[in-house]
Length: 332
Image (cartoon, rainbow, N blue to C red; front, side, top):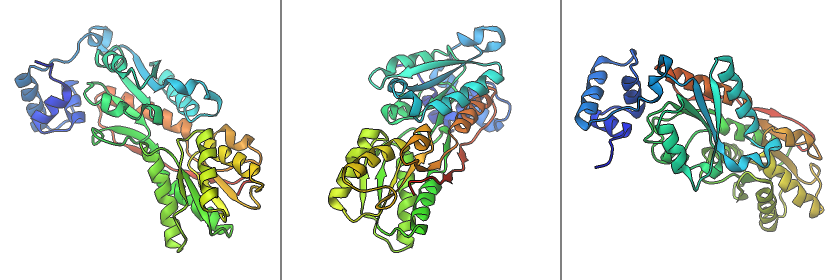
């Protein structure tokens, strides 16, 4: 018979995975009836928490994993990952916790799952990216405090703790700015379908255009990378050659779009105004400098680390949404 998991205990007790985890960790802030239900379920299923880490002084390892996609190290200087990683690391070190970096390969998640399930660390901060979007499901049965940077999609996400920026509001900011410039034929380059941030940003863009009675059909999908932005921009131009503005769902895709616009003889912003998202280093160094929706990337990492330490201490947490803002430069 397979070994029972924390998810099995939670289901048997009729509580959330997070509640079951807090009870079994000895938290004192859980309703007494839930404590009884979880303990009875654990006994019935013969569930045993891993005690390897708890055999150390204080019952903890003093280390927290920071998980990111292995492929993110190559384009590190302009990627989404650098700032959240910096924020999470700083928060952990300031609390005398040792950050342990793990590079997740989507083809080899089993080893990572096994390591985390064995409690060699006290918790984990997972920086969500397209390359490892399936990691939420892979980690669903792991009895360990986990906080995601980015809102996960799909199954097993109802009890997940995460930190994310208000991507919907950011999409609205981009669309409203372009309309205020007098642009009326506004396309969008979305991110991958398996990322909640992508759909939220496009939804904000679409809602603003719909409210103003503007056409919302000019949509092309990318994957947050520069080449995908170039490809998506080429597809948009072939179908909608009269576009006068584009909102790209990431700075990298916006820079890729710029290259195609330049090659087509169109100038930014005179012919087509362009807005990106993230406000990473590539936005300020683009030519022309890119107007971008800034999400507080370093703060997202810091808050995620703070939340995972709260969970490790047995306290209750909730998802956190952080504000976005528009940084206006020469592209729009």
